[in-house]
Length: 602
Image (cartoon, rainbow, N blue to C red; front, top):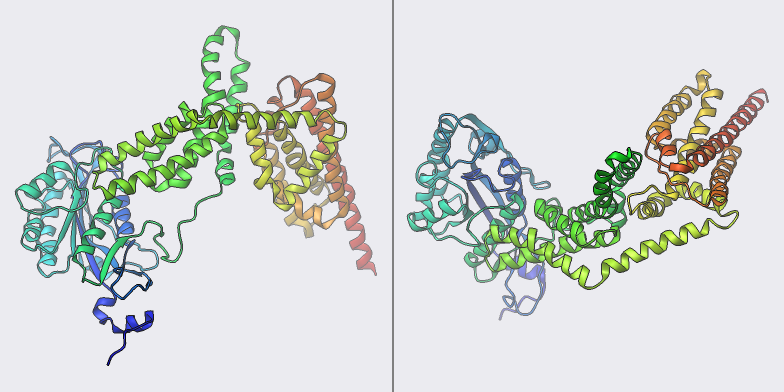
């Protein structure tokens, strides 16, 4: 009497080898489309790559209850884009009403010549061998495509090599007629696609039953189409599988390793990546403020959006792209809508809104795919509906007001700390120490950007310039004076480069760290320069009852200019920072050389 297998290994051993690893090959035929309303229609390589990547996410598992109540491990189903014939018209033009003897097009193929048939898809990276087979007039390209359709793709269908066919704005009457006629005869081949006119002909005239959310493609992106087709084929393959198995689409896996989920960035990294916009807005706002009075009305029209709308919109878009980059332009539209309408004056609310847009986009996408909603409506719901919903929720819940109040409280507390004597020295030394131990990108830069939320420069940005950029410049300047000898040529070269990068670009402060570690005197004087220069800035601020606001990442003279009426205080603090660090560098270098010479003499 046989016993029922109780372990996964026993079950797997009982499965025939042919059933353990299913191989499903997919073909794709189509064109860039009749109209020009499809986003990404000018990049066929991206489309084919997206389709292949999503097909590789189709997985295979035992149906629940096939082997009792045991839960079994999933296995990847071998699904790949084996053949492709895709005609792309140049110049972003549509095929509707196109002059076939005047319009230029290119035929892109996969697996349609001997070289491509012999090359295998790399299992580790799912690379696809895409070839630009022919470029010429549309009539010539269609003739070549029709030839390959007759002699390659149709024969592959006849020999049962193809399990599914994806049709994207194809030509079922002429160019792709042979392959579609074979599919009409072979009822086992699953067909899905997009492009309303062609799909209607395929279904009504050719008698082919379409699966999934086959429909129009207006406003559809390459990602939306690829996911829609892969999801539709996974469901269709599941219906065709043996009784014990089912196929499903796993969107949580990346395309390189089935064991690892897609990694999303930290929210602090997302905020820090928006730095270019913050600096640009601060400089633009400063320029507008010094323009002549006769252009004042135009200045006010620009100042308001720069102060309240520009930065939240940027943060919202970058956040949405960071957490939902696969959605591309659809989340950009939704995030721009939320950032401009609901997140005015609050970058924290914008970051939250971008994240919510990306998550809602995922939910909308999979819900629509489950309900077989066509690609056009999916993108309308994501690009428009998701943005509108998030905007209403954030405003109605008062979340934007709360987060805006939180950042205002942060700025108030920061400027209140400056009233105490000695606080500048502590802040400066903290900046110098924190930059060496990894606090800068983790804490300091985010605080700088929060302070710059309204489009102005920041006090912490001025501290950044004083304690990091100019301290490094002073140390490197001392190296240029002391390390001209041949044996220090490397130090001389890197110090020379660091000076002009720091003074003209406001970056590359890390060059000073090795010299600070080599000499305790240089290290100590760097802390003294950081603390004293920041304290000088605060002493002048307390006398003038105003604070100097500035920024690093800009040329030195721009950093001083950003301080507005307090530019003299900023310039004085900069001079103190450079002089102290330079003197420390001189003494530290001379002491180090003297010690080395004594060691050689001994």
